[in-house]
Each structure stands twice: as C-alpha cells, then as structure tokens.
Image 1 (cartoon, one colour):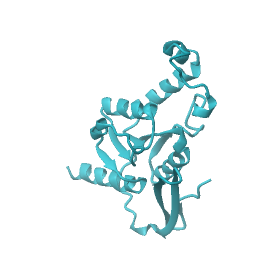
Image 2: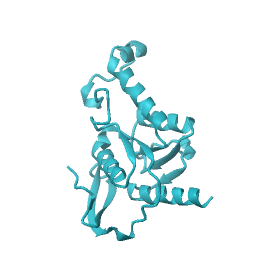
Image 3: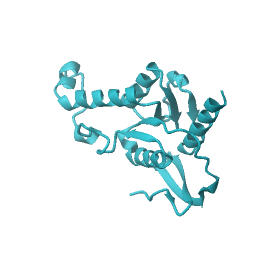
Image 4: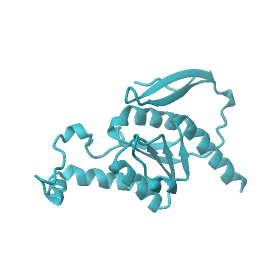
Amino acid sequence: MFKKLFQDNRMESVRIRWSEEKKAYIISVEAWSSHNIERSYSSMKIYVSSSWKNRAMVRLLATVLRDAGHEVYDFTDPHCRCTPELPPEKFPEQFDPNRHNYRNYLESQQTFRSAVEENRRAIEWCDLVILLLPCGIDATADWALGVGLGKQSVIVGHPKAGERSPTHLWADALLDNVNEILPWIVEQERRRLAE
C-alpha cells in the first residue's frame, strides 16, 4: 500500500496532517536525498498505540520507523499479532449499561482478554510507546501502562475538539505531527551518547 521509503539513495518525506473537515489524515509524500540522514542512533523497540480508525496512519508510521531501523509493534498488522484483530466493526454491539453487566460483557469475548494480554507483553518489550491521537480509552490505557512501566513515551497529534487529558503531560514529548517523531528519536539518542 505504501511505497518503500528508502531506495536509490533517496528518501521520501512523508507529511501527514489531520483534516478536521474530512475527519481523516491527509498524507503527502516528497522525495529528497538521503545522504544527509544521520543513521548513528541505535535501534529502538517501539509500540504504536492509537485508534483502529487511524489504522492507515499507524501502518504508515510503523513502515517509516522500520525503514529507519527500529523494531515496531503495530497492533493493526496481523504479522505482529499472535491474536485476532479487534477492530470495533468486528464487535458491533457496544456496551450498554441498561442491557449488559460490564464484567459479563467483557468476559463473554475471550478475544478481548487475549488481545489486551498480547498488547501488555508488547508494551513490556518496548523501549518507547507512541500514542497517536485522536484515540480512545484503550489506546490511552496502553500508553499509560508504558508510562507506569518507565518506558519513554511520546504523544503525537491532538485529541478531538472538546477532549483533553492532563495525564498526557506524563509524556516525554508532545509532538504536533508524525513528521517530528524520527527527529525526536535521533535527538534523544544524541543526548544519550553525549552523556
């Protein structure tokens, strides 16, 4: 779906922005020479957390990070998962407190437990958790678990209008867009090596 980002000594710069009007990410690509890319930083293990509605952006970000030499757990990629995918459209019956007991609702789907346990193991494995906004409570909980485990964390993007979470201040960085992630990683490694 996405072109390989490194080929013939050129790199494609991916520019991504959220369109509130279209309720979607807008992706544009421009090529530039890769001879200026500093590749002296070490590889990181990265967990990307977001909404299933952002799956195209998550896949693109995972590809960019892998092409930069990092290992990435992408919950939307069946090649990363050992458990079935759990996009919301697979479970159309939303929780309704007037109709469901919450514990019974959650326990009625064994795939819920296996998926969250797999995510937990991936978060324990990683060095860095990236939370791509906008997203819901599950993605935020994954990010918060990483923070609690002492992982580096970055939040990218903005929540939906009217939403906010002061706990996002726990992040090591709040970035406006995905174009800032790789430079941030390189700068963190440069600082680490300078110590």
